[in-house]
Every structure is written in structure tokens, then in C-alpha cells.
Length: 74
Image (tube, rainbow, N blue to C red; front, side):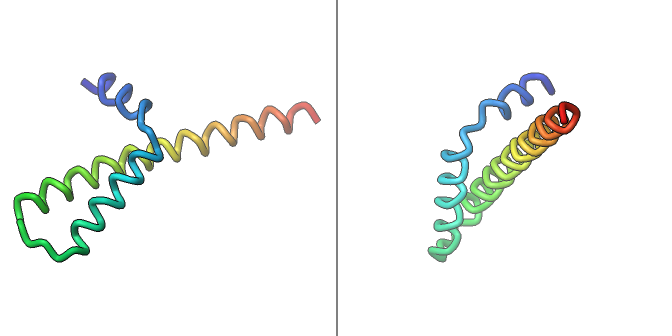
């Protein structure tokens, strides 16, 4: 199950995830009070944020690897 989750995170479309997060934020800012829908949206936002954080971490690690490779050639 971890492998399946990992592969799903790798396929995260950053632009679409941010757009979805913006839509969720707009829903909350609209003042709607449906608690069940709010909980679902909060859970989804948490999943998206986690996936984006992992994607950012992967990008940072890759940048460090590239810098390390460039530094060893000099």
C-alpha cells in the first residue's frame, strides 16, 4: 500500500493541486457552513498539501544532488 501511495504522489500535477487548494480555500472563505462537506474538503486539502510538500522536498533533494555534482567537477 505504501508503494501505491508513493506512485500516486509522484504523479502529482503541481499546478492542478494548487488550483484545487485555491478552490477549497475559496469555499471556506465563502462562509458556507456544511460541516460534512467542510470536513471532506479539509481532508482533501490536507492530502494535497502533504503531496505538494513531498514533491517540493523531492525537488529540493534533486537540486542539492545537481549542485553536488557540479561542485565535484570544479
